[in-house]
Amino acid sequence: MQFELDLEQEQLRDSLVRLLQAQASFERRRQAVATPQGWDVSLWPALGGLGVTALTLPEAHGGFGQRPVALLPVLQALGHSLAVQPFLPSAVMAATAILRAGSQAQQLALLPGIADASRIVVFAHDEPAARQPSLWVETRARCVDGRWRLDGHKHNVLFAAGCSIVVSARDEEQKIRLFLLDPTQPGVHLTPTRLIDDTPAAAIELVGAQAEPLLGDGLAALQAALDAGSAASCGETLGVAQRAYDLTIDYLRTRQQFGRTIGSNQALRHRAAEMHVALDTLRSAAMAGLLALEIEDEPERTRELARARMLASRHGTFITQQAIQLHGGIGMTIEYAVGHCLRRMAVLDALFGDGAAHAARLGASLAVQIVASDEGRAALAA
Image 1: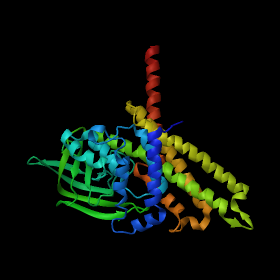
Image 2: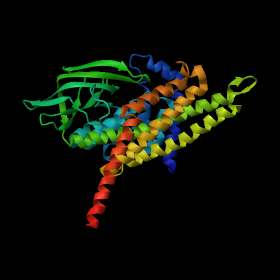
Image 3: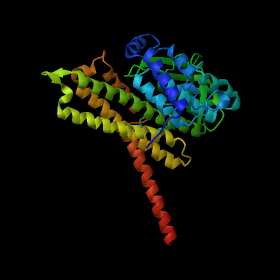
Image 4: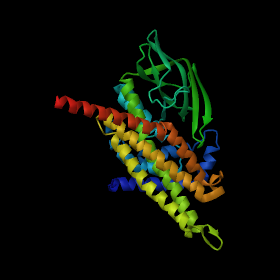
């Protein structure tokens, strides 16, 4: 699968790479995650200044109206740098949900701020009781005297502290709705935490918390946000795997043992070659995942996204695990970047269902397609 960048996309990619090399080095990342915020707040406006947060938003809301696949070099660069930034929950998931379900007034109030990175809106959907089902929602929404109030729990809400939050909940008719929540108001209790890759997150307890409903189709908007996040995670997975591969090749070329580089060992060269093949497959999967967002047929889109996520999980995990093996003990030290690649890969694999879950979804979808085609042929024969 081939994807060629045009001149503007190449310039954006090169500018982003230079910015991340200057302001998001591994050492600066370690310093940032040690702060109370847990991330480099000063880098976010710089990303907005480059336009990466506005890339796929409509021009009417301060965006550039690009296709989803235009995000691939951006996601790859962010993954390669291991940058801890709210791009996925804000510029991808929350922006998609607001665009799909928000009223015109809500879109005008929120999307331009997301586009220029002056405002961060994150997405809260995962719940403690959920495992792999993507539409598991137990948080309750009730309308009291014309105002909506939420009760329930959300966990692993990325970058929740101090940001507006789009929350999924079920109303009294069991219909899924999306709401805009201010985390500083009464009835909202945040418990900060860190994921294993140092990403700041929070568990949220909602007790009669007042929220503003997004007036569009909540179920469709939720599915669109999850699909966009899932596809974007494939792109970031590619960047993380590329970083792990680059570090490993450099290590094999420089590490001396018994008077020669360990990369001269044929067995290790074969393993490096297997990593390279896996990286090429992962690159195609990342591209296919973003292209799948443009498929209008829902069953086909579900199949393509599940296939992309399954392959991204399988090959991304393989590459990062091999990177640790080929580095030996140094690979798991906190001072060396390759271990952080493995940690980030584990988080990306878990955010939207792991590879096994997406393989099951793909199998179920293919089974339905096969049954439907068999029934169609039987009907024609009759």
